[in-house]
Amino acid sequence: MPEQGLPWLPGDDILTDDEVVRLIRLAVGRLGMKKVRFTGGEPLLRPGLVDIIAACAALTPRPELTLTTNALGLTKVADALRAAGLDRVNCSLDTLRADRFEKITRRRRLDAVLAGIGAARAAGLNPVKINAVLMRGINDDEAPALLAWALHHGYDMRFIEQMPLDPQHGWNRHQMMTATEILGSIQEKFRLTPVAEEERGSAPAETWLVNGGPDRVGIIGSVTRPFCGSCDRTRLTADGQIRNCLFAREESDLRTLLRSGADDDELTRCWRTATAGKLAGHGINDPGFLQPSRPMSAIGG
Ligand code: SF4
Image (cartoon, rainbow, N blue to C red; front, side):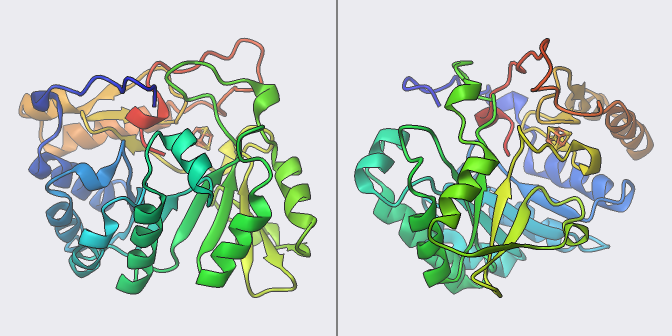
């Protein structure tokens, strides 16, 4: 996020809770989606989140329900989310050092984030996954410490290559810590054994057993080891647009269709057509790559 923040969407642009649930019902019931992940911005800011999750948990077939969050505020809602039917959470945490946390997030909230992560585990939202992005010169030495901390607390640690989805369009390939570098850094302290590729399926993380197992660590090499060929994701934004890829430069407007009275068949057809147009890959490594105009914080992970 830029220091001055990002403009808020006008309230009317945002799907209502009923609209969100209707579209998820179509995705699950007609498009065969088995897992629903609530992302952001920050999904815990949505007042109706618990009710949306409860409605999704009542769908048939019942999808797996997960959430990606910065963990701030989880201490207050983790139990309610679990009771509503949430299965798991992914929490973003790039550092365990208070000074670095403040530099990266511009907030002195590391203790609150750690408490939120602990609340998720206590509420049974397991396995709690921790997502860290290592940035050169900022937290590039912290992989072993983060992994040791995660293992100690029983969390699943995953490191993610930084992707060009920042609002400043300041991403620099040479600043990025590559999956190979992250792996090397972890191996200075831990013995890693690769987990068989067939276990990965469409999951983004390559996984290693730590010190012979059963503990594991994941690395998501989105840029240098892209996994687009097995990607089966589709994204519905808060303002009702379908994005068939994180890096899509075009969106399909389900909100206008929905609010003009479209029936379930029309909505499903639009979503299916949007998905069929998915490109073969993100193209970050192509010379002509163009970053999408929506930043990560306006898409969700
Ligand atoms: S970049 Fe696009 S196609 Fe590739 S894994 Fe991400 S969402 Fe899927």
